[in-house]
Structure formats: structure tokens, C-alpha cells
Length: 229
Image (tube, rainbow, N blue to C red; front, side, top):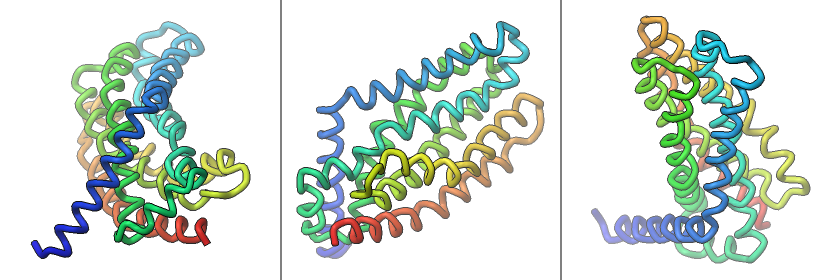
């Protein structure tokens, strides 16, 4: 590893740790996302009725939709708070390219939002009556899917950064782009419940993540540069 690479990695870790510390200070954002996830999932049995067969059949879609909506909650602060207090200008001067800065902040978003949602998904799935054989598939899909949601959400947050009514525009950008992850993730669990091969759906979800991983930070970096001009 060259000295330049080591220095860039050190600065990347510094940006990541900064966002993790800030997220710890605003732990209520993470708590709000997890509580929204659990409460929204708990409302479906009240609306659909107490039929165990119906709830188990709809459990994959319920968990995925709730996770998608809960992941949106902290996104407006991902870049907006730094833009308001001037920290974003300072971050752009640390010696990292804009895509690397956005990637560090996206990783922090996944660690503070996606990972807690992943941990909360198992109890919600059990409450909805999802079979034990399907729960590992659900968690494997959410492991990939929450990363995809963080990447797409981070890109959208950077694109609308500084725009008027950014909180309204953000879901309009994220929800259509996240639809493939929702489809593949829920389909994998449905296949596991039916005793079919669920690997193709998770492989497609992994391919979606592999495509989003390089492209979303690049688009987010371009969005940040436009917001600061």
C-alpha cells in the first residue's frame, strides 16, 4: 500500500468515524427509524385481520416495504445538516474526492440505520408468522437490500441537497429506484416459503448492489459539487 493510498484510507475512516459519532449524538434518529419499522409492521395485522396464513403469505412484502420507508427517515440529515452548518465545505477540503466522501457518509448511514433495521427484522418476521426456514433468507436479502437502499438514498440525498422542499423530493427519487431491490428481496423469501430455489433472486439483488456500489457514490459526488457551487 502506497503512502497516498494509506493517507486516503485514513481520511476516509476519519469522515466515517465523524458521522458515526454525530449519529450517536443524535441516536433518536436511529431509534425513530427502528420504532417506525416495528410499529408500521405491527399495523398490518390490525388491517388485514388475524389470519396466520394470510399474514405469513404477506410477511416478506410487509417487512421489505416497512424497511424501505424506515430507511428514508434519516436521509434528509445525511448531507443537509452539514450543508446548513458549513461542515460540508470543510469536508470537501480534506483531500478526498467527492465520491469517496459520499461513500463514507453512506456507509455511516447503513451502520446506523440499515444494520439496526436488519436486527429488528427477525422479531417482526416472527410476529407476522414467517416460517423458520424463510427467516434466514429474509435476513440475507435485507443485508444486501439495506445496503442498496443506503446507496440509492445517499445518492438521492446528495442530488436534492440544498433544494427547496428536499424532504418531499427525496422519497420521489428513492422509491422508484429501490423497486428492483424490493421485488428481488421479497421474491426470494416467497420462493423459500414455497420450497423453491431462492438463490436466483438473491443473486439478482447482489448484482443490483454491485451495480449501485460504484455508480451511486459517483452520482452523489456530482450532486454535492453542484450543491456547493
